[in-house]
Image (cartoon, rainbow, N blue to C red; front, top):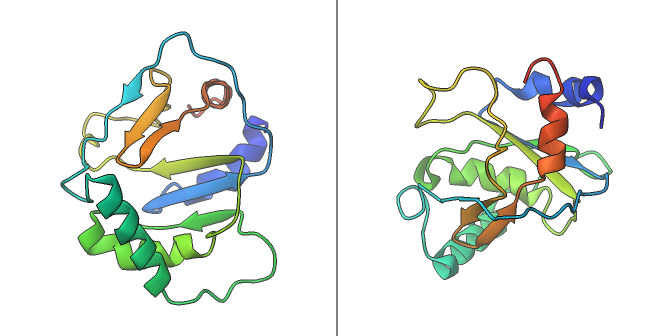
Length: 155
């Protein structure tokens, strides 16, 4: 996706708590020579650090979430809070319930850093990592998509 098209779809959402933009394009599969995984710094503090406990909690929250009244078609983006689960989970689960059972080839997450906002200026694209660690396993980072974003003047 080109820079201007991405910006039109995503920039209006930067002021929101967290946004996931789901795309239907092909996912890059270029292999990385060495794995660099960003640790799950908040696991066990703001959400369960145990895979089984986290999976059960998320399933229960989504099951209990109020049904969404959405227009027909697949959601192209969701807006959800990303604070600690004790504060944000009931609202976030409503957003994620809207995409339950759907498959997307790429998800772009735009979110602020609660812990490092004083040090970050502009937008941070995770080029130094190949994946994010989560209690449920590693989530790969598409380095080719990140490199394309860095070609945009705003990055």
